[in-house]
Picture 1 (cartoon, rainbow, N blue to C red):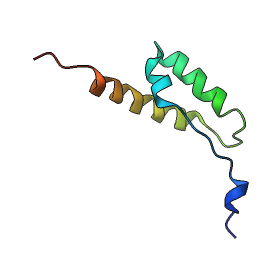
Picture 2 (spheres, rainbow, N blue to C red):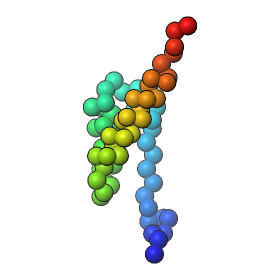
Picture 3 (tube, one colour):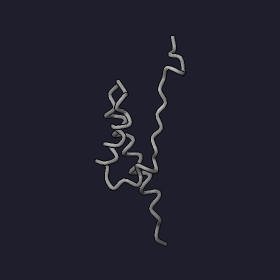
Length: 65
């Protein structure tokens, strides 16, 4: 039986906020703080999210012509 939608807590992660942070250590700590109420393991999620943010940083850095 599926869990009713209202029973699933919503979580917003501000990617811009994470992009503005100077290091992965700080980003990881911020995401872990946001996931503090999550009862499932979060290490893989945090690791993958940080990988994606590193990719976004490379894309958002202006290319010199």
